[in-house]
Amino acid sequence: MMVENVHFDLRWTTPFQLGFKLVSVNVSDIYAMGGRPSFMLLNLGAPVNMNVKCFNRLFDGIEEALRTYKLSLIGGDLSSSKKIVLSATVTGHAKKFITRKGAKAGDRIYVTGCLGDSSCGLELLKKIKKPVEIEKRSKNKHGLKWNFALPLVKRHLMPLARDPEKFIGKATSMIDISDGLIIDLSRLCKESRAGAKIYSDRLPISDELREASEYLGIPPLVFALGGGEDYELLFTAPASRKIDAVCIGEITRSGINILDKKGRKIKLGMKGYQHFV
Image (cartoon, rainbow, N blue to C red; front, side, top):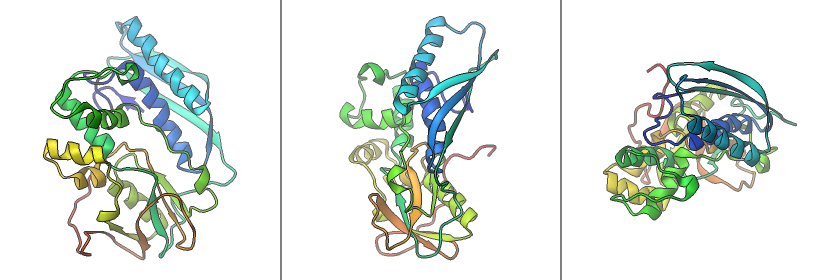
């Protein structure tokens, strides 16, 4: 579910981007279990005075994402509401499900791409304070060079779900990073009844994030560990397996520890997005 002013803000999100993101985040849930998405149901609550152009652009974004993931929209429901409320249900199939329960001590921990870009992009959007029509390749004047800002903003506004195909048969557990690395890693470890050791100097951090972090005055590690909505896959696999992803740590028997490059523990509370907190 995506609720206006809770999960998105139309001050810096276009209807097209919103529609695209709605599909992506739901496809990511299917991918995170090793599945292939097939069909989608859509429920929409919208104000009675919602602009027709806005309505059409929302569905343009949904249609673009459906094409991207080869999905079919098969039905849904529509109602009036004070704010825009979106809910999608994506169904799929899998030859073999990958759950959060299979991690074992000694397994390596992997991620499929750079962490923290999306949450950093959100911080930049709060400074821009207006929609950025990246789908039309528009540019915005900003204190940070646009070639650094654009990839971060795009990761937040129009994320792409990560296909798990090449990890099926190798991964022992998997989850997508929707609420932040620390929170989602904690969920995986809880389900697997295990712990984890993360090496902070191995976290994949983009050049764009490093540049933007300096501009914002926020350490990149804050975004990488606590930022949500990256929708990268976080998974584990036996140490003996060759995996084409970034190894950031290993599964232990208990506890979750973040270590700096000298092996010292980094004190960090439960960061990331938490519902009802």
